[in-house]
Image 1 (cartoon, protein in one colour):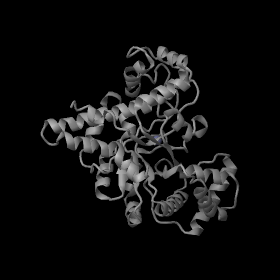
Image 2 (cartoon, rainbow, N blue to C red):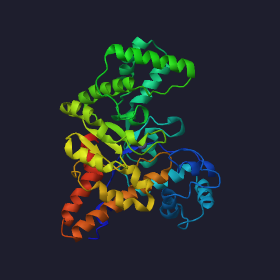
Image 3 (cartoon, rainbow, N blue to C red):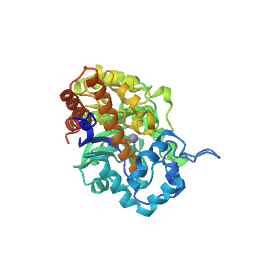
Image 4 (cartoon, protein in one colour):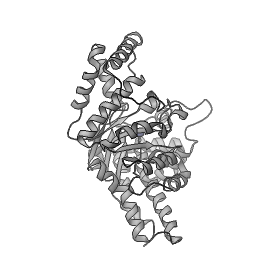
Length: 380
Ligand SMILES: [Zn+2]
């Protein structure tokens, strides 16, 4: 069979994505959505002049019945003519993704809900609870510093409805991964919570960045993950403008990973670029660690193949996962799935050609990475 067929019909499990923009986007908003900074391009330049946007014009334009490489303005206009609801349905159907595991905690006011993603796709959707969002809601609701630790745990447990499949930490964005990973004492948490609540009072901004509180979150999350067999997702490397890149290498997490290893719950490293080789090595070294390169496959545009080739270098086939990391734009679910299918089929096809792998083994590996590993650890 043609090698591309080994991934063509896999009912992929997207283990990390966000909600969709429910309404039409004007030209500016569409262009800004193609930026990780979510900010306007510098004067005299356009966000359409980058790899991911070039790929949208090449790969997504035909899904909207446009010629490849049509002008950005024509693309934006056609998108509005079809309407956001139909655009979202069209791209999600074309993606062939079978299950969506959705982070509900990132700017939820701009995106549709987890169940709406499922309804648009006509596929099951599970929720991942972002621990920092829960902590920030708790802080906003007003309490004493001494009550924070308990209130957070109660709120986190209270947020674990039936559709929830795991927890997420964005420690990397907030305190960075270069921190002490010891479990903080009650007194330390109370002092840090007092500092944070005073800061909220003073600035009116609710944003958790304190390393002691972050440690409290991940240790509380670990207790729950251990009880329920939930994965905890960690944001790694690329994926938000507020990272300090040299402090988000996943190897900084090693002491914590070692500390919770006996508890057995899965730890999934998200995005990972440019540390996908480090992440692959950690997945090889630690039985409970998994990783993906979803974000990079989309955002590297035409260079996606190299990312997949590197991702496959070392990691056990049982430890790599598929994700799109799509946020808002339906195009990113479609293109993320397309890039994954093409890149994996080509990489494995080359192994078959070189007589390093059989077609039957290639099929088995593709099914593990695209579907089965996520089904096993997220229990979907
Ligand atoms: Zn993400």
